[in-house]
Length: 476
Image (cartoon, rainbow, N blue to C red; front, top):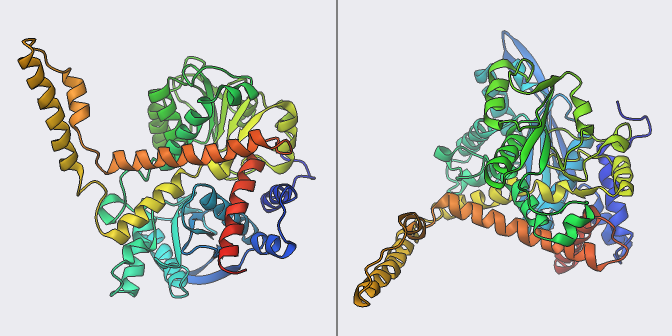
């Protein structure tokens, strides 16, 4: 358990905001305007289930409308409360500003344990929640665009989109009212993997700079780096899978709700995920060592720690025992403000949530644009690209004939070079570019300002300045 002096998640966000604005020259009125949450709507609605009416409580919070629509996930969890939703909405504002997605910040939540309900019951609950929000324009393609979060996924987003379209039958852009939909319901290729893929791209960008890796006492590339992942949900699974398969990292520990699996030779993310889905937890997994007190594995020696599930898992009670020199926050707020200070004093480098898990909202932005343009990415230019590349290949091979040296290009190279970019390749390219550009804007502040000691403060400075500039442009 964390210490009694531990700040709440909301207080942690406020503390970090305060630390950043104390280094800025903002008028007090503008600082306050950026800090406060514009509006939070609480809805209580009844649904007839199992022969009785059950009442549910949900929230949708709008932190900042410096840009519209506002954007942010909807989570289903028993831990949902107004404070948490407002803190997450604030984080979304800064996150969107940092990665230059043209949205304000919002967040939603429903106080429910989705595992307690059958699929048809969840559909009834979700549709009613969507109805309550949509009729107040808290779901709307031009005003408020939700996405999946903890406890929700493609299925719930499809229900929400369909509910909105039933209520707005003439809205030609209705599909853009929510992102994270399945491909066959207006989604985009690469959205499910997006947050985990973004974590991978963030780490790759960090490791491109020797100066930055040296600050964490690391060197070289991601190849061979020992990684511990907390939470093998959508984000943790994809991050672990991609780092192992593409970059040669070794997953030495995975922490889940019922314990952890440790294996210095490497854990196969696919095999463990399949086991969890079949058995409800990691216990009994035949490879590696089972550790009942999973939280202890957060303190295991490794190169990179990826908390990818809940907020506050690294707190005042365990921060001094965390050995990882580099932490990347794949979840929202996994390191509390108090723990952040302890870790910084130890020389640990933290790649902050605001940047590290922005892959989801970045690809959500691409999906929203796709829905508004009513055409999938790559449809117009893919074959034309292939034809142009074929001209180059043909010309090279003709040239070899005219020189009297018959040679042909490597078939693997030809296949890769000739293939035009489809939607998935374009989405990954756009995400990679976004993560690189955002990291460079953070590290510039981190390295150039003597009063900025860490990436989190740098991220807040970059994003708050962008929000402030938007408000100034509006005449505030």
